[in-house]
Image (tube, rainbow, N blue to C red; front, side, top):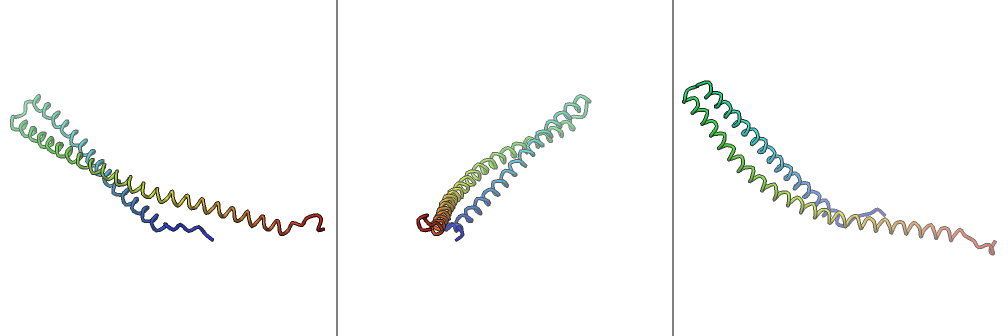
Length: 148
């Protein structure tokens, strides 16, 4: 008789839910990474624009050109602020998703541990039965010396 876990359907459901939560978490983490990379990129653009402004001022460009470059820096700084706000929102979402994943994993682990305990009990019972059969077979074949 093969081992059959009575809650196997529930275990598969819990595994499926855990996998779905993990995929959602991975998607959220990927979004965080993309926003962080964009923040780094925009920060570098701001530094480059400021360096360009300083070089332009040293070369003696017109005030209109400096003003335009200043507007570009201001636009990038505004974009940077929006990205930081977006990062904060995505980080909060990531924290919530991480909690959801941990909860789903914990629920799956409870059922998995129950399955493991039942499997070990089944294997122990099977070993006892085999030993009992071996003992009975030995006793059937064994003849005391006085009967020979």
